[in-house]
Length: 365
Image (cartoon, rainbow, N blue to C red):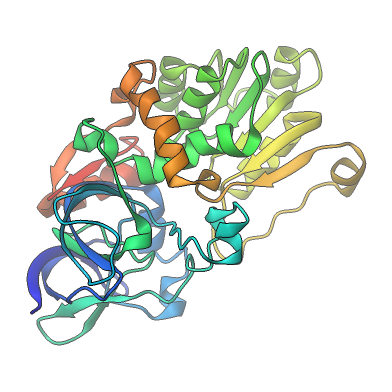
């Protein structure tokens, strides 16, 4: 029996959400219904809303976005692995556990990742509503595959846990799982949005000696310094490469991280990393975007370029690894959280993310 809920719906040609009623479909055998407690608003959903990530070409509208949340299982399919009443974290990256990639330890490339957006329900006029990313957390309730839902017994606040499936896992995972930085090393992070700031916090926790934050916005540079950057650099002020070389014994950083969401930030991360260093890339900009590196430097000068889809997550491993860091008090979580708003005010959360006025706006049920 379908359930009527409220959700933030995106329509073709619109760059704002419309909060409206839809009839949620019943869960399939491996689905659970999650009642959302809080969802982290991600800047990437603004990119999706304005069409940069390919929604217009895919012709999926209307859709419900949102891909990182905390909530409670309130219904389940006959074969779902979660029980009713469990507190759970939601992420866009699935873990089927049976495909080649999952069995090979590369859950971030699970074959269930880029599947056709599922139908989650219908509007009052009968139109199907789909969920790109198969999560649809900007809603009161969502039908989600159980392979994207992970039980937690953490007693951290909802607003903190809402960020785990996106910013925490992407930023901290890039440092810990992908680059695997070493104590005493030098790090440069290009872009200080939520992913970049989580990178800085993880680098500090792993004992990086010098953490260089590159960011255009003064307010974000201040935040970078607050959460652990030893040096903050404005790319518009002088020669950026010269500044980084002067702070890294003339070599460049041991580890470079792209978190700027642009072609320029990818190139800068590469250029600011030393010969033999590790460059970790998180930006993709649009599906058609391309980036080029000097082949001499790439092939002969030893830079190791690594991709980082969701921090190469393994949710069971990473929840056990990162949640205690958040619980310890050594991570500055309050610095990462924007205002907490009800679903009806998601337009304000969108504006705060779009205008970079807040790092991570939080949307509650």
